[in-house]
Length: 134
Image (cartoon, rainbow, N blue to C red; front, side, top):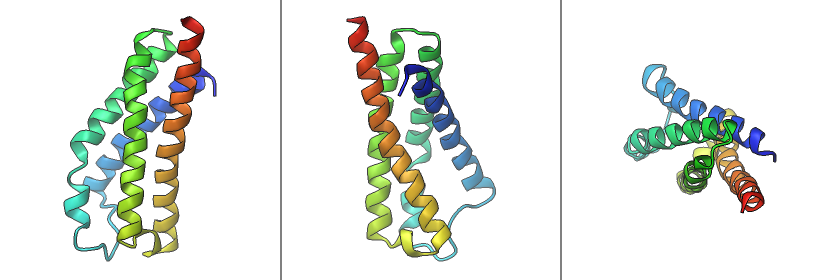
């Protein structure tokens, strides 16, 4: 993946995370019959997800501007994205979130897979770009 593509996808991912939380608290994105622990789990994420989203957006902007600082912002943000995806996968698997409805399952799976795969691809893209400059 090119550094420019990584930058734009980081920005889009960051905006997507922020939009998710806006919708979660305004429209209500919770499934109809969530597990008992669902809301306690979800309500622990707005602060770290907001920090992650801001890092993705700032890192993406820095990457578009070809700033070396992008590496230092996007690299930990990409790791955070992988952690988020794996944590959500574990929770969703253990609590039957993938099987509540087909639509909920597909949406959760796609989001979780995106976080892990894009996080890994972003790290590889950043590594390639940084190695060129060294």
